[in-house]
Length: 463
Ligand SMILES: Cc1ncc(COP(=O)(O)O)c(C=O)c1O
Image 1 (cartoon, protein in one colour):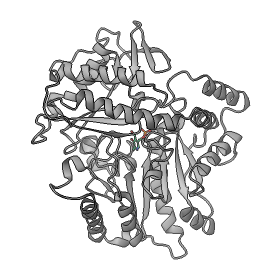
Image 2: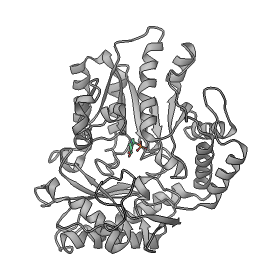
Image 3: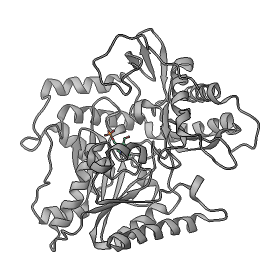
Image 4: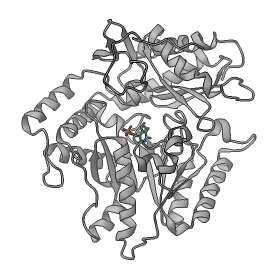
């Protein structure tokens, strides 16, 4: 499979691009759902970058809010000063949880939110009336992703992303199976039995490492890019939280990707009948108009800190950045005013139907899954055995390149879904502003990109 690329003839770049030998296409303008390259190619942004651009590009209201904030105060050091922008965004987030989360710490990215979260969990146990300094461990899931700084990568279970850094990663993390029915549910097993098996595995892991050594269990409410848009089986998160509670550990939900509307409710946990003790959000929070993430701290943890040192032992130069907060606050107001979470839910249902109609019969499509506006197409060599393509064949990256070059659509390629190395995904995460016509375009162009590499859809049993 040969991979053609954009602008191989481009002049040398000083940027440390993802590839040192290939320059990616240069975007000179973006509007609505489209990105425009130097040569005038108009690309449909069906991935919102990395599941970020939930409003589409060039939103006038958000641009105005950023300018207004710049005219007031562009930056302050948050340990020393506060701003209306930070206060307003934090209040919006607390209110959006019905008060379940009590305080908000704004960061510059999802990874930083996860870092802050791990430290907050540790601090909670140090500030209990009877401190528990032996609690240093976290349990997360195999093939998960929680970020790329050392601590957030340490708590991520994706082998390929960890590989070369493994000897430098923190040792106080361990991993249990993800909730991944397509590959892991046994024949004849019910949802209840599957959930009970996963809860038992978590219980066993607590016992293995010592139940009173665990600060928290860190899960994506809906697995995003590395496992590929896998929604939890009903009752799964509740069962996982029950194990945490049994052992006094914190229940941590990473909603960096799944949060802020992406799955069809503002917080993905609203659909699961659970409330986390700590929560992270990022991508859809600022919709790409500012680099921003946030840690949301639940009542239980805030109460302990309030009785303890009354201070979070963590800060960064840019945390609570006023311009980023103003951008994110306006993004959230646009989402509310335009009913975009509702549209995300509706368009998500339509997108799922159309993907199954168009690609459900393809011999290499193993599963089409998603919720809201994050969908994944898992590609296999064989639908019966579910054997993946070997990683060396670069199926998903090649489809991604074909999408850009031949069908003017930006997709997200994913890999490692089977074992952290092998197993290809094509992920879609378009803006919440899309229409039915946009969905039709996305599905047709995605299907064509896949067919251009794997051949046309063959009529086998539909998924
Ligand atoms: C679930 C999850 N957590 C954390 C991160 C890291 O966020 P960032 O790339 O903004 O640092 C990501 C990024 O994809 C993510 O999907």
